Image (cartoon, rainbow over the protein chains, first blue to last red):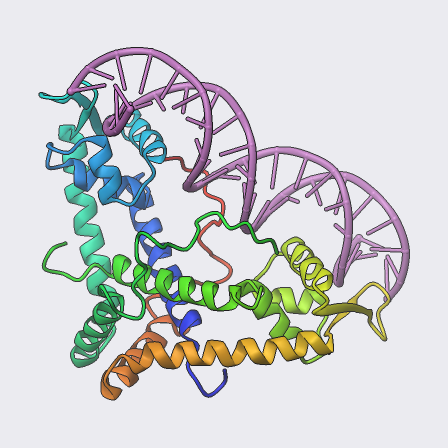
Length: 156
Length: 156
DNA sequence: TATTGTTATACTCTATAACTATA
DNA sequence: TATAGTTATAGAGTATAACAATA
């Protein structure tokens, strides 16, 4: 544990760090990371709630409250699906689309700043190594059909 | 977003992947990651609940329930502090100490497996790059006095 | 009968507040 | 007065279940 790098700690700190910076940067635009994610997927103007939920790995009930918030903020709208009257297509408002572009630029800038802190060679290897670790079949791949329970029954 | 690597996604997937594998591996020993962490710190036999909580970045109330679970499982005990009758020193039982060694070996094996999936050169750069990013003053350092709120007031 | 989205609700996790006993 | 630990409780997030409308 002392000689070996603690991968759990390394990945955990990196994840927490980037999430904290994302949350702060997007928070300045009054967006949560999840709202930003959903807003981006809605920007195509063709996806239903269910499709966005699936793409964003959200439960459909979580999708409802996220969309409620975006709609209340005037950033997105539910529209009837042309072929399926059960479904709703999610579209961004003009303001929502503008805000998303702004947010996307902020996020790009943040990523550039973080990666810019590394020498170019390290930067490329970092991305390449992480990508291969989490790739399908890689040692960090979490199969969707056998996921870690999001609500543990274990205590303590 | 498409040409740039999505750092949030990369770090998130790596974190989720390693946590899932840790949870499964430790779960086979009936331990949560947190219990393993606390058990390891208790193994020195000199630290109080508060000190372990601080080292493990746990709230003292979370520490209480974690210790309750370890104590119920017969892996750790609270003992009176020799100098301060308010405080409790946490010690591992013989079984707890044995289980921790076993768990530590499992964790080391897991880390070896994950890093072993990478060419040696990539492996070293990955650890080095992550370490520098999360180091104090690095772009992913989250100062303790200005943390991301763990309980957000924002909705959606 | 199956599926989309909604509502109501329950559960987990974690922290805040109030308390006891010490310092 | 301040601190270590405990208890009770509340908040936030997310899921499960039941439901309405539609396929």
